[in-house]
Image (cartoon, rainbow, N blue to C red; front, side, top):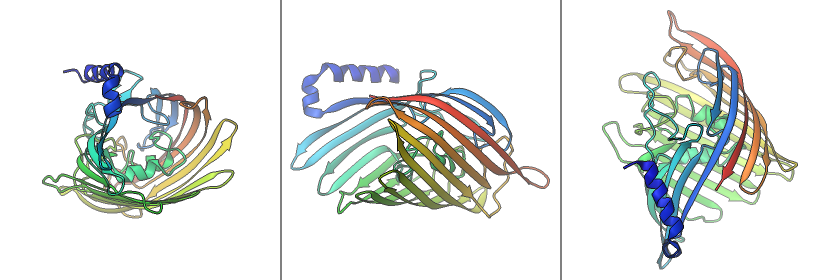
Length: 372
């Protein structure tokens, strides 16, 4: 059956079934983000050669998606929940973030419900247990504590940590079990585990605290296997990462900071021992009916990673990203934005002997985002 028709039929049933809605509280939700993006130089930020890139992007500040979610009161404080969500490339109408890409990137096509596909049960006093395809605690830590949120096009933190680098495992894990603790004194804990295969299993955890204008969080994950689909452009399957984040909302601005370390041990066939340092600073300043956003992030290693072709994804020695922009609120659900990004990479490329190739570039994006 065509998955798109299935989703449309589900939406129609929700719209036409008020009796069912009263009992199960099912909601159709989504977000459409469209941006005109132009880059010059190493515009993708992940190649050691200069490229020119002009495109309409379905997700400048947020990746476009549509989904169904709902809950049911089971009594005695228990609630059943579910979430089914699909990424959308609204520039073409295709589902998912990407089609399959062969070597050396090795990215599979997104399944239809690649953003979320889980069912769970929860209790206000005991916490919540969810099973299925869920966002990793590390990615949750990144997108909830930087000035650019979940942007995978303009957020310096997300670009150096999750996109086009050595981080394995993707931003969501299939066949996973996640436990979210209840909030106690502003503290919450999330634990994630995937089922095991021949390589092992993935593990993740996030501890978060919030009190008034201050917030802090610590996330850790260990990847022993890659999911069916991931968009980080790497085949490494033995990578561990920790990240410490903090923020403070002053009267005139909110500041964010992150420190982390990524350990890439490669694969059994091609072992490595490379440690990367992760650093990020960003801020959001209210101005008019919107916010001025600024951020900088750095991923760097002093070790010697394996060389890659200059045309391959992976600025695997050093990557620095700087972004400034303005996000203007048009209504409660709609905003427009203008962003300028500067990307610099140092890549150890193939050769005799291997050499470090530096590249830099800038990207300008103008877009609009609407939530429903």
